[in-house]
Length: 312
Picture 1: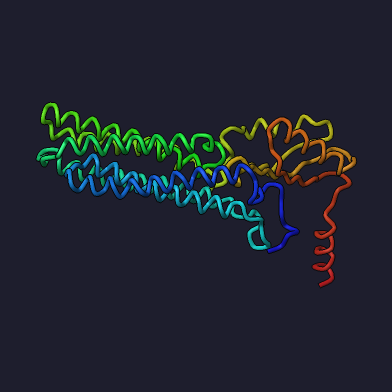
Picture 2: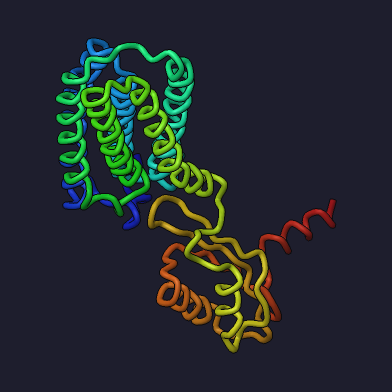
């Protein structure tokens, strides 16, 4: 591992935000893992699909938190000669896997609910209500612990969304328990499970799309490519911009590359510095690569290669 490749874009392991995020994630992971076992046993004992759906969602929470812990650990490592951007993309992969796992869980819940809806089995409502209420408390505690970290990375936001959505799942299970206890509506149990599944799909849809956009190196949603190009073109020394690309390396870490055509010979270093300052101050783009083209500028390497090809 080369120390020369270290970059300020990659926070050191002892960074306060890293330590705080890791502790919060670890606490949420341990509490969710412990209650998942209790909720799974409770779902089997009460024969409740809504509680089983909530237990399945809680299992995905445990997996999501585990993936986020792993991504946070690796993202703090410095870049190497083989991974020049370091391991930041792991958080995006973790978020994508989390979202797809939620969709798979929702699909199973919908399938099982369909088989139970017209012939609902008997459900033990009182134990269901007690376990679902405890589950709601555990989920709200985890969401409260992760709330301050939700803007520190896509994987952290996905973990927070998992717990927030799971809280709604616990509420649905509680509603099913009350309906069965009060009116004997056993069909309310698969109905509550369907509500949980829909909430899962809706809540994770945006997360999956955002992760896919980053992996496809799409232009960040908060930036307008035409606006950035117009801003660069307003510089008096710029005659044109082409091959402009803006993409996301990881949450909050954006990159830009462009070819800048100049109308007359000028101080190249000064021009690049002024354009980089414009991009930094107006658009928050820190990682930029600009290639200057135009009168008086040439690429010695290309010229040398052409000369060699001519001599052959």
